Length: 116
Image 1: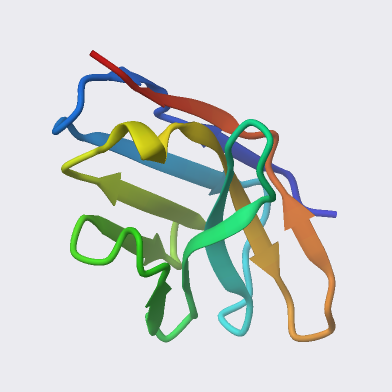
Image 2: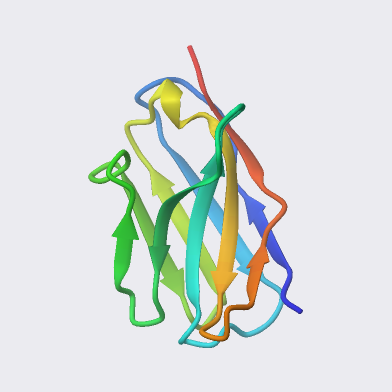
C-alpha cells in the first residue's frame, strides 16, 4: 500500500503560477509511472501529465508549454510546475502512481482555483 500526499494548491490569478508536490509514503520503483490528473466540476477526471522512472514525459495538449512535471526518484516525489494559469485550469488535482502490474494509487487531491 502506498499513500500519496499532495500539497501546493490554492487560489491564483490568471497568468500566475503554482507548484504542486506529491510525496509517496514509501520507495517508488523506477518502473512505476507517476502522474497528475485533474477533475473540474461536472467533468471527468483527465490526465494532465505523467512521467516514467526514466523521466520520459507526456502532457495533455491543453497544458503543453505551460506545465512541467518532474520526478525525484531518490525522494519519492513528483511535482507539477504550473505557469500561465488560466481559469479553465481550475480543478482538483490528483497525484497517481501506476505500476506495471496495473496497481494504481491515488492521492486525496488538492484544489487549484484560477480566478481574478
